[in-house]
Image (tube, rainbow, N blue to C red; front, side):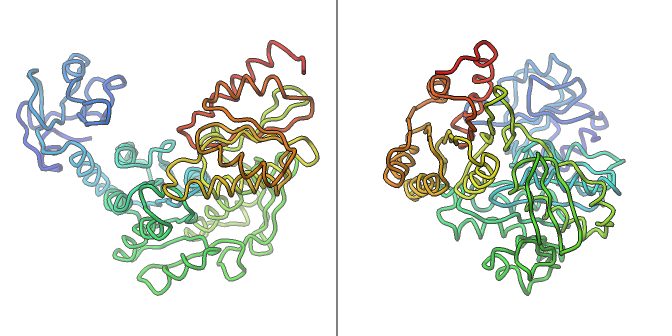
Length: 459
């Protein structure tokens, strides 16, 4: 993969100990999973310092350590000023060794699903390397790049950010040829400050492609986004419900666990899944496949797979009569709205219960967005709201004032909500669980499943 001398040169460091020609077999930032022969990068985190594990990684057979201060242990060392920046420089150097198309996906929602959809479609003609999970930040993107091998013909990555400048850095590291912008909505407002700040941040990907004459695939239902993208030095492809888009979602249906979507009035796609909002993620992938000149008609007949990602609108049964949609992975105002719309379509006349956790990082507008969510629940006919977290009190306040007589309860922790749910659930109930990842609502479904394994009685 690299020699120690290449590592030192690529990241502007100094080889203090070790043979220049010694190779490494891989790169790790985690002492627990490091394999013999790998380079260990000693990063600094909020609650850890990789330098404290140097003795451990030396004993595990690390080929070298990338550090910003010399350790007591004597084994191959590359000394740099900043280990994170050195990791990113090394990733940029490694990426330059591969002259392959690179698709970078960003946006306020749907990034991971869109990335996976693109990977599925492009794999019909390419050997595709798809970024692992949601490794989309200043550490994850470099680690995904290091997974590239000589057989790979295309790379698909997800770029995430919660502050300005991060996507610009990630684009410089990954060198995309195609950028996909799924949509821009109010998320991470604490870091971005405003919706305008989010536009500026997400458009850092477009700025990179502007300078490098690449291609941008963007949500054409956002006129402000389209306005900011037009007339620049890249090819622009749009997707959406708007008839002016290059790839138009002309029809959509969700029934019997399948999503049916029609593109440009003729191409019919079927996808396994229940979240109709995922049609836009699939449409972004179809538009990207169109850029690569794939036979979309052939793909429409073959593509039935929509990535099923844990905690992302997954439908399960607690009992034969109680259904649960787990969408606990994350939440923002737009994704919550989309989830509620699909949830209500699935539940129909059944009693609808929403477990709503706080939507984090909304800054000064947090109270406003939580109150708007409570009003949305009332408008969509939700009969019972179980709120978790301090900000979710504003959800209940708006829900109660807009839907007097409806049932509700508030808890600080997910485990408390589980105890309550086991006492109120009835046959025929349909439950949606959604909140920001930090609220740990992912605990709720397995705890409920465990409860209903041992009892089938209802209060």
